[in-house]
Amino acid sequence: MESSPCVSIFLVLCIFIQSSAHGQSLGLELLGRRSRAAETKETLQETKTTRFLLFREETDRGCQIRLDHLDTLQQCGFNSSLPLVMIIHGWLESVHFSPSKVHLIGYSLGAHVAGFAGSYMGRKHKIGRITGLDAAGPLFERASPRDRLSPDDANFVDAIHTFTREHMGLSVGIKRPIAHYDFYPNGGSFQPGCHLLELYKHIATHGLNGEKEDPGLAITRTIKCAHERSVHLFIDSVLHAGMQSTAYLCKDMDSFSQGLCLSCKKGRCTTLGYYTHQEQQSKKSKSLFLMTRAQPPFKVYHYQFKIQFINQTEKPVEPAFAMSLLGTKEEMQKIPITLSKGIISNKTYSFLITLDVDIGELIMIKFKWENSAAWANVWNTVQIIIPWGREPVYSGLVLKSIKVKAGETQQRMTFCPENMNDLQLHPTQEKTFVRCEANSKKLK
Image 1 (tube, rainbow, N blue to C red):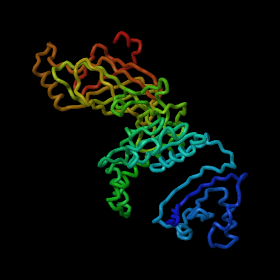
Image 2 (cartoon, helix red, strand yellow):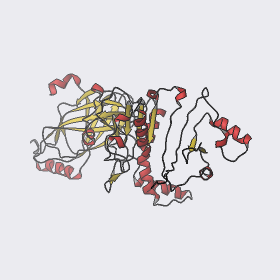
Image 3 (tube, rainbow, N blue to C red):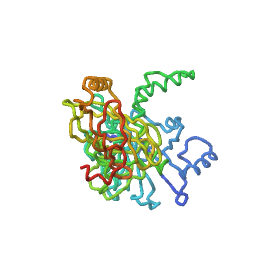
Image 4 (tube, rainbow, N blue to C red):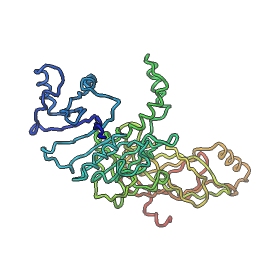
């Protein structure tokens, strides 16, 4: 029994980029039912731009879908119940444009589409670069490299992950490394300035102006804010070419937050975005971390602080501190510091500090034991109980030195107490530390 042939109908979007030197007439028969004069005028304009053509059958010559003209979908007979296939052409072969000069940038699901295009082109010649902006997570997190964006899809692939926080086992953006360079701003799970509180403030502001917004949209806006941050970070790298954000190779965000990864040796750091350094890559992905501001320009300056304490009490102390930093350009006041673990004797603590402004070369640090009322009361009580002239039982904390590394300049500095005869730090007390590189070996 001979079966009748079954023909699937596809929607194909063909993008033809034509230069003025190679531009050709598109064919007036593709432009619908308008007058010949209008068709000719608009056709000449569109030969220099992009065309979207709908093909419903193999013999179909194509019907043009016009941007911002939804009625052309109906005119071209688009059927939403049929399967959909998109084919994206970057150039005509007659243009003789080298694939190695092509840079595809895809956002969300578009990042994987760019990967598929690169994989298809790579059968002959690999394209130069693909950038994935918070590539989609659902259905792709556990997919094989051939079914998602991967380092094989171009000579160089970079990805920016900005919303990998999981909800019910799924995340909007993919978390796993999918590129040669995978950037995780602020850890990649979420972004500053995108919290619900910030969005409710926005709603409240619009309410004062007489505009009302459904509070239920706050969640949608939160998701959109973090997911789209990848796009804004990339745009920011182009708009602020003189303020490139530096990212550092690190195994995870926990290590990075301790300031342990601010090294640029052997290509361990690079810039985020358009101007990221492209070098000969292996198939192994490199995960890079950085912190950013909540708004553009997003660049911050990374510092690792290493402080050695001597705790003269019998129990771990869990105080909060504050630092003021004086540089050759600016001064930053009262930067809060909270150590996650209690301070025990003869241990060095490392943590990351970021600054929104360039303070120049750091020349002085003021370090203050900010809290707590309980420890202040203990200290005052000890001062009263212990007879005058005798050394107190509780002598506070001793800070031997503060070591600093600036990520952006790779400069290392050592700071010592201004008064070497008084090394003890008591609750609510502030001490000044100055540069002392000459004494570094002796202090060790």
